[in-house]
Length: 69
Image (cartoon, rainbow, N blue to C red; front, side):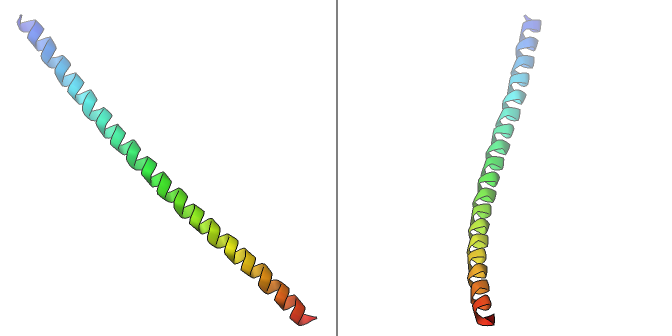
């Protein structure tokens, strides 16, 4: 019976450790996913700013070309 209890105790410890590792991995994956989402949002915002600046530059270029004629 003592061996059986020792095996059960070892199994419980292994299961507990596996659960802790799984929980930590899940939290880490969630944080990574959140960081990716934030980075994507920032990239989208920067893309919009670049598009606006490109449009403004084209407009200014046309005005300058008209002024030089």
